[in-house]
Length: 466
Image 1: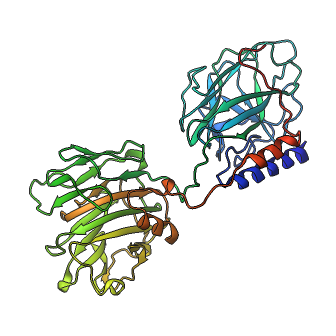
Image 2 (image 1 turned 60 degrees about the vertical axis):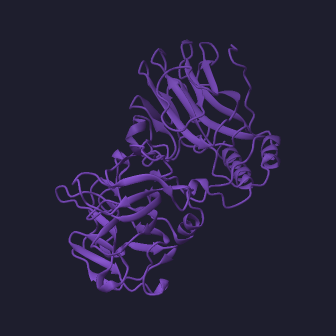
């Protein structure tokens, strides 16, 4: 069986490679948990999941149970616990309009008890779908009493569905009424063709993306990442001005109120704190570089032993410069030889700040128009200690108020590479997950090759059968 499963996995990988998209579904055998239990007696949430996510601790990863002598494939199978509501789910990439087939096997460890029901739902949205039974908008199946024979026999099921979005979520749910412990293994999602293939993304989605295309007078700037981190618009900020990509935010440069004057984005739990990796990019057009430190953006806040770093426009000695400031120290780019010794007023530039994981202040990298700059001034305090930032993010309003326009601000939870930064520079207004870099070949041929092997010999049941 392990050899058979390996062949299936290899063919699935071949199919996916041919479609040039990420694996549509992973770990159907529940084997990618760090320290997976052996044997039995360990809860799903005690492990470190790579693909499946559990709703609570009411589930096991098992090697045997009752009359189930062994997993159907791999080294472990998944088992719900008796009379404890719980569910597991996984979000995976799909082709909108594409036709798919969900297959899995299930078994129950007892012989005589037919009460072995659970629910299978598929949702068109990513993330945690919650615990309501029969709530899937793409599939809502109820595996009912009597459909699964006793005695630990693995029974196959298969259901078709059509994807409507680029990410789809599969959930298995036990609503707590079953009297035995239904087990699940060898879950597969196979692409059968159809739909309009999407280009593979150039990178991860951002944790926050403020295009700043909002109408003049709007009290908030929309976060287009879909995470809901809309930014409050301060008293010295005007939306609806021309930008590098549609609209932009104009910030007056006059510190007057003492409150929020730029834009304040409350990112909640999506803030990267401490010395965590992150990348922040923005387009800026400075009306002036003079007048001290004028913040393009700042990440963190001064609380306890944590502090903020700022990226400012400044003009020491009359040179239009960019400075990174942290804990009273700074790194400066005052003689920017890559741009004729200094930046210019009334000109759009693309700024990217990359913080590697566990970075020292001196590890921070700054790019202008996708060109990595070499610092030539400054004295960074605590240069031998990793960054330790708090959770806050402000645009155009840090140590001093920016004077000019800012557009297309993006915040990523990892250190982007030079190629990805170049893509952002060349595609104003788009985040990396919206930028396609290749053409996808038609995947149907490889999928049919997989199905023709007969290895996926799963029985198709219609809704309500049994």
